[in-house]
Length: 283
Image (cartoon, rainbow, N blue to C red; front, side, top):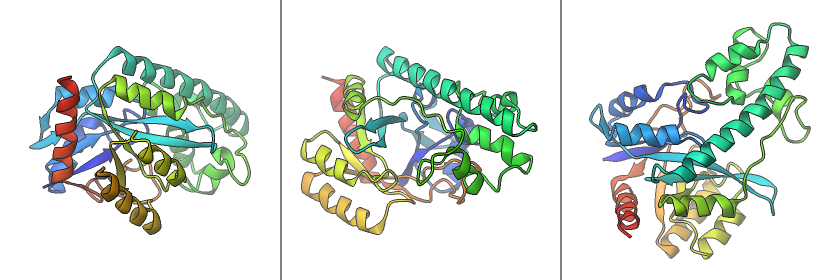
């Protein structure tokens, strides 16, 4: 048996409600599923409230955003089985507020560019998340023919970072990697570095692994390069790290269709995550 340990729902920037994902996992023949919404305590609470749904075991999770200020790029850290605690709730609320402020500024500027664009329509798409994401804004532009898709040329012109900064890009302030790792430690969660290829995090991965600050690495991910996957496999073997896989499912809020179960985590690795989580919660 296997599990998809990296998925997103309307709790963050996905298009599918959380209640639907266990059915999708069942259809894919999975035994386990993690709904790992960005900086969200809602996905954690959903799994604790629904430990088994449609015959699928839900692993509480969230994907926390950090920033590597030394190398100037974002970092995503998957956190499994965290406590539903005040520290995690405070972090989630803080990031929700920072995101919303940044995206509302983008919306104000977009209303000046496109008379068809409505901030309220973007907020309607975002109603389950408690904040606002670029995906919600792009859905409004796309449905009125103002964009060529979710994350194509129009997206890059509006929100791109390089080579030219997008004309309505406003970015929330992210906490340093050390701060987010300390949070996961305080929540007694299991920490996995997500998709190192996506944000060019291999140098950071080597550093954190050597310091013993990661429990594992996400290797089977659609956007990890073959070269990085090979090195991560070697590092995981050398340091006895947990190895995970996940689709990074976002439903229709993606350019490339990736059904739940496209990338998976082996059963023995799921058992390692669960065993480590139990050990930390009994200390």
